[in-house]
Amino acid sequence: MINPQRVDFVTLKLLLAVAATGSITKAAQSLHLALGAASTRIRDLEDRMGLPLLARHARGVRFTEAGNAVLHHARSIERELAQMEFEVGEFASGVTGHVRVVANASSIATVLPRDLTGFLKDHPRVRIDLAEHTSREIQHLVAEGEADIGIFAGSLRQEDLTVMAYHQDTLVAMVPNQGPWKKERAAAIGRLLLEDFILLQEGGSIQEWLSQAARREGVQPRIRVQVKGFDAISQLVAAGLGITVLPEIVARRFSKLLGLRILKITGVDTARALSICHADPRQLSPAANDLLDFFSRAAASSSGIRRGH
Picture 1: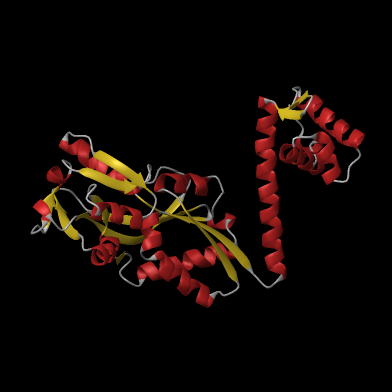
Picture 2 (picture 1 turned 30 degrees about the vertical axis):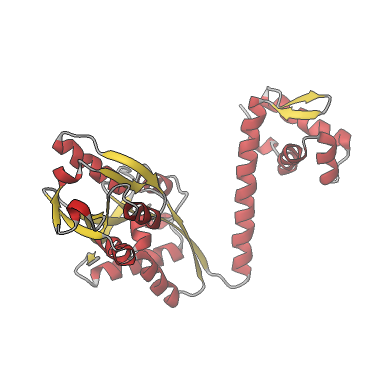
């Protein structure tokens, strides 16, 4: 078994330099190491791993499969160290806390920006790092400690997480304002499932909702295109490539811009809850707990769940 205490950062930086230059000699020069010392470091690391990491040839070196695996982790460590240095530097400049938030596209497109703005007005020295992920990914990232707070739609899959209600929206269909849809105000889910769909990337909560509805109807959803971003979805619907399902507040925004039609979906429950997940509050930073308290008060101010329309 490898002892992590015996793998030093200088050797990992050396491997990264070898990958960048394709040469141990050039890598050693870039780190101001003697060639002999650099070669010894790599040889010692290979001995600890029990496998060759580099294959030497006349034009330089290349990484073996084992070497590529070590290189992957070395890059991850380099990124983590850079992030640590950045965050610590911000504390020195007056930042009092960092909160890592991961959220699905629907929350980012609707209520989350407003709430984060409100929180930062009260906590101007807290830094919020926000990243978009699918609802499926969000729970995993929070459970693994890669994020402090997650905002997702759908059911809870990670039993070790705490969940609280955040927001409720309604799903609607958005279709071209022409042809058979021109005078329609509502459509049964069974009829919609005969059409080609344009959705967000795989793993999103709307795709899961649509798949569940299709199973109840005994059909397979016809997903024609999957893209990133509601704007791209709306443009493709406007071009006549298919229809989509969106949160009503998002659909109203893009229907006005592109002249599209919004239809109420019948025959299926279209109410959808957005939830907040997090680990044990005792494991969270004071800034993360402050943000959770803010979300809780915001939700409670409108009878526990705010509606998006």
